[in-house]
Image 1 (spheres, rainbow, N blue to C red):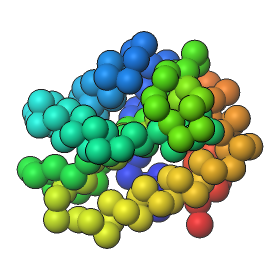
Image 2 (image 1 turned 30 degrees about the vertical axis):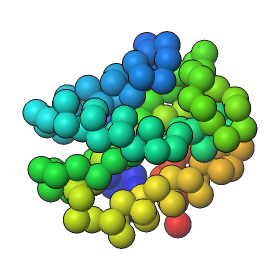
Image 3 (image 1 turned 90 degrees about the vertical axis):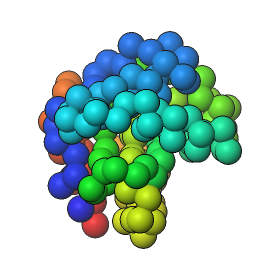
Length: 150
């Protein structure tokens, strides 16, 4: 289950970044803080490199930046909410308000894809997106996700 991999303190509300690069950097910094990782530069470079290949703005106000990185032992997930929205080169050209950053070990392709797929499936529901953006805190966001997991 995805929510088993996301501690409530992993949801940052609100995000303060005002553009794509600053939001990604903020999420990577948050990931390093939450999981006590000392590889900020490597993770940031990996996420930005992946983002250059194709935007992870999936539409409907959601972005799921992600990367596979050497030196981490298991998938790590953080999230954030930007009330104002951030231009993220999304498929539907709408700003992203909900963000999940997923970083996995390079050797874990299957788990990485499962996490991305499950997040996308859950967040495809407009009711879930509304509840997430109106949640009071990270605990409430995790609860919304938990209620929609398979």
